[in-house]
Amino acid sequence: MININEVVETNQMIEKENLDVRTITLGISLLDCADSDLDKVCEKIYTKITTVAKDLVKTGREIEKKYAIPIVNKRISVTPIALVGGSACKTSEDFVKIAKTLDEAAKKVGVNFLGGYSALVAKGMTKADELLIRSIPEALASTDIVCSSINLGSTKTGINMDAVRLMGEIIKKTAEFTKENDSLGCAKLVVFCNAPDDNPFMAGAFHGVTEADAVINVGVSGPGVVKTALESVRGESFEVLGETIKKTAFKITRVGQLVAKEASKKLGIPFGIIDLSLAPTPAIGDSVADILCEMGLDHAGAPGTTAALAMLNDQVKKGGIMASSYVGGLSGAFIPVSEDQGMIDAVNAGSLTLEKLEAMTCVCSVGLDMIAIPGDTKATTISGIIADEMAIGMVNQKTTAVRLIPAVGKDVGDTVEFGGLLGRAPIMPVNNFSCDAFVSREGRIPAPIHSFKN
Image (cartoon, rainbow, N blue to C red; front, side):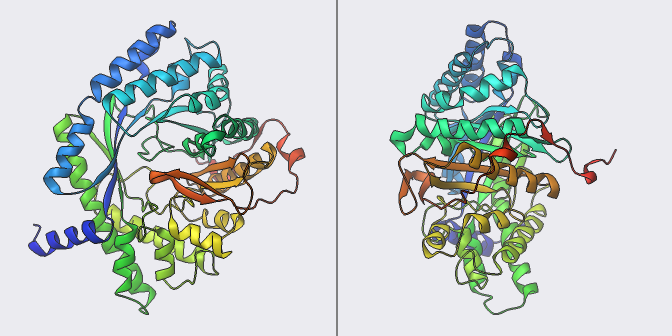
């Protein structure tokens, strides 16, 4: 039973501590839209999305009104488009046509983002995979709310270094194609190792082939709530610190569970998972970096940061998993630079570097996320950074990702401005010693020995 004290407590979290449901994401399978005729593929995609998702935004608003819980985004994820368009698309321009159809359908139903302009190439690339990847710069430049993701490796298969090398070039081209908007296209493009099938967070969301025809996934967020809770236990032991994080994560996840069940019931679509990630926003007080500081660090990036983040991530998972039987997606603590004012402050103070962020990704939920780098950074350097992050995910059997923005015309000391949830970011310096000879090798890095568990 929920008592009045819990109701008051939740209201306080919403009104003063930035608690929100970050997203209701409706996953839609487009496998039945495949056809050898491109026009028919586009027609089927548009019809299915606008039919299945027609009530998504309205339902989200009704739930917001009923429970007074902010639902920041309503989103759609679809089957990786490389699979859907494989038979019909003979050129990269054909895939761009599908991207524009996805954009039109998403705008028709009123969602904030659509994810799934994706390819899964952890072990190798089909012709369709390569065509889609090469189409990404134009696709993201000619659409507004379509997001793209590519899975480049896994613990079971190793790292596809041919795809890693190609993605360095594609990220550079995407930056160039969208240079008039601070290379915004790169903020809608992410590369993964061990990408999950049920992630509701952009830009990495796609509807995996293991999923049902349609499913509701919900992502919650509440860094401000955790920070406020920790203010009451300053100076206490690590045991008290951990218990406080766990209890708070439980309460946050229960809010998401309530919203997910209600959305599932209203839409008549099965509930999939709760992603219990602490996802920050540019709003003051809604920062994962601020939690780390409340744990006892002068700035994010100070000695002890990786240990503090490891504890935070683990306790969030332990608390959240008690609140829902179906926890999935990424689930933990995000550390995007542009979307977290505390991270921005740490970069500007000189305490947080790209190398320290990489170390932190060993224990956080995702990886090098929303990091702006100089526009003249070489494609091979970007590929090297990607390879390092993919290796962390592969060896540690976890999801890792890279979302870098090589901002054209910008250098260290400059700032890029995206607005909204994407925020703003200072340009961070990059190690420019060459990795060309390493990245230019063909093939894939083998899977680690512990991957062989059959």
